[in-house]
Length: 185
Image 1: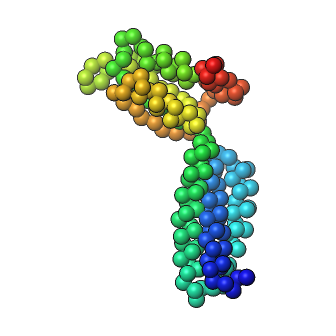
Image 2: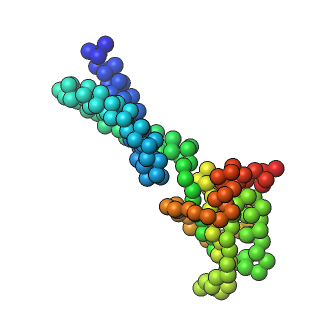
Image 3: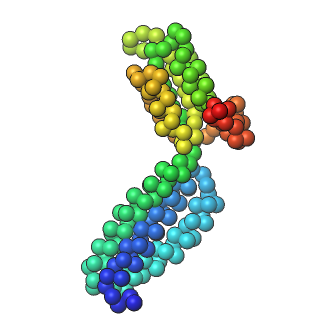
């Protein structure tokens, strides 16, 4: 079966797509602090890697195998990233600057949607502003951006990933699975 060059190319391509997908997911899990899950995935990943690399090294005289390995690597990166986007592991902190400082409507409306918001008065180049800090699971990130843009299309938005989260009502709500439950009713 492995004598057929088309089948060999397909096997190498598929093996490398699977390997690099596992590699990408393992790296993301490692960065997010999921040590044991990342370690478990790495054991599967290395077996796939050795098999795929072995097939290529045993057949170095056939350039199509090397090309399949490289193409599989690139596709694997994309597939791994797409899977991570779907998993949306972790949290995102969104800072919003708005000119809606008088009636505090933006903060109130975002809270009504189930997001935790801390706000304070701020000074910008053009005068008084309201600064908001919002923490949300990554799976709700796009929903939050859409909400902000609908309520204040001119809002200035900066997002980043927090490394450590501790305390506050919001963390307790997430751990108890209550976040957004009341807002979605």
